[in-house]
Image (cartoon, rainbow, N blue to C red):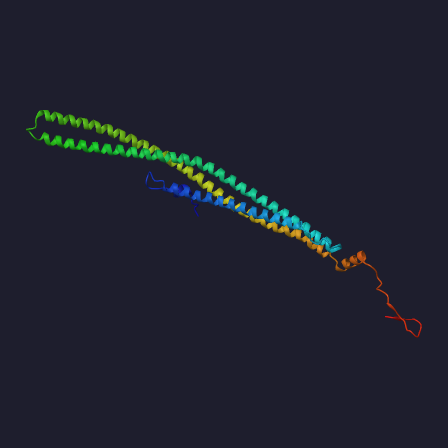
Length: 299
């Protein structure tokens, strides 16, 4: 299937029309706006990641299981540590997103400068072409008027030549007028043809530069689409990698939790804080009877 290109399908039948050119420029402006929107999106997403990272970092510093001991304490310490690491990875992701946004901004500025040079050249050619076209049409109008004046004078001369009572002086005047009109027509013809030639050369120059401009604009559009596609793809890869990184950090916590031994923690607490292994003894009560000696009862 034949590929379609800007230089083949954005022409106009009217010489002074800029419809095709304007259509391309509008499309490029829309593309530039999309670049800015993606750039702003990246910056906003980076701000969200940074805010989340800072809040997560603050959360990791809060007291969590301070009074715990042994294996559970180690697991909770690992939990806090990896939460901190996750927050730092999100902070790094935020900076990476800002770097990508800066790359897009630089790309957009480079395209802007390239376009500016081409557009300035094309605007100058459009003005030159329009001016020369107007000048040519004016000389054409003047030339056609002189042709009509000459034809009218020749018709008058022919009518007067067939009239015998026309004075000789009038005939001489008519002949002089016809001669003057003929010379004027010749000069007008040369000026008109000169302007037509200049207009043709102007059109050729414009057409060559327009083709070059179309090629530059199409190249920019190819680069823009490719850049945006790759940037979004890279952005998604970064998000996926962040998920992988977070899961790897979480896995360290899971491994620590697997080492959390309930019975060991119970025994650790007992060994560390035990107060004794014998319960209180029996309580002896003294029972005094007025008629007998003292006796002891065991409760």
